[in-house]
Image (cartoon, rainbow, N blue to C red):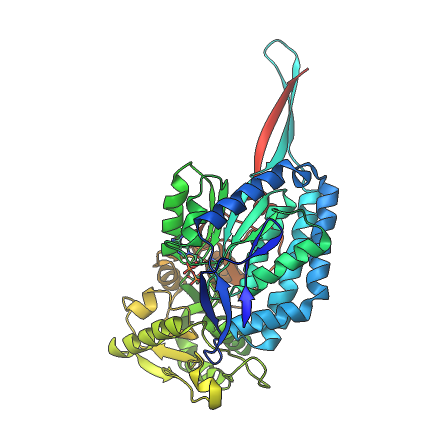
Length: 484
Ligand code: NAD
């Protein structure tokens, strides 16, 4: 049986206290994960501080950048190992993981290494009251030991999205991967050792949240900052933990994102775009569209086209040819999503398509597969329209005017992303200004330029990462003023 150990101070550490890792495609046990307790958390924090005081802390930016490139190259060299690990943990389609998850996992190290190497700092000159001159300049130093707490939906991609910039800035990181997806974070330890990243710079602790590694790590006074991706409610618990010691947090949280289709949109592109945004990764993308608003003249035609498009999607395990949708991550998550499917019916939805589980053959009958699902006719107050389901589903409602759809889209506590479909330039820019989100896509979705700011407003997050914005969290800015 495969064992997933903690990675502490450059070594794989067993704890004797294990929990099962199950494959979402057939619910079979694929490994045992060694849960870290307080002692392992203490050891990792101590090793991380020792690394900051050692070779890593003294390393030049150029050398650090080279090491980050070496990490990316080694991930690419071991591409198949990472791919198999991610597929086993998530069951997502092979094409998706091989085109997005693993390449982006490697790219996150290169992109941020280059951004950090080339980032300027500000400088000002002023006249002093005595007629002299003073020059100020800013110096960036690393924050220190950064806890990186990760979700399960894009395990390697979202983890490296934080580890990449954190290490490029000279911090040490302690990663707490999701209990559902321990594999790629563990494997990355081998990469770090292979390319010569010093001990204690990258560490991994396995376990759960409350009463386990997640809570012990985020409460640890030796952790200097916490970067977290996950549910808004978990963010609240971590923020409370971070309050002790007034430690900074960077949060990428949940969403209930609107997709908005105007009557003048390129119809086919809008259907294809909303199909992706609602169903990709089996709907387990924080940026995904669960509320679709379509302008009335094309409403019926759009509902019919999205139905056809959803019904053309193939649900199945990673390697079945033509598969578009894998399983949900766990039995627990499947129960949650099916709970919302039942609630939608109870709240009076018209089920346009789906609403249940597909029939799967053989071992896959035990997998966590659900049907892509579309509803109409629910009131905006319905829980399915208000709460994040995190499954392959959306509700479609009609709208008449721009003002109306802006109000509908903004009537949520969340503020992560939106995708707007229109060919009118004026409408596009007005929507860009009016929708209260961190990310507004026009005629696209999940199109990423890693130099741009990424994050959510309202309950969807705190702070922005991406490009130079990542430096704001992962470094402390010191102003040095020199009186000449
Ligand atoms: P989750 O909040 O349940 O878990 C995330 C991580 O937090 C896990 O590693 C978990 O063990 C840990 N954790 C849980 N409770 C904790 C506690 N009290 N203290 C410390 N750690 C704790 O989230 P999930 O179910 O893994 O992921 C799905 C959620 O993530 C969705 O809400 C989704 O929208 C969100 N998400 C957001 C983004 C974004 O960029 N905004 C990206 C991906 C996912």
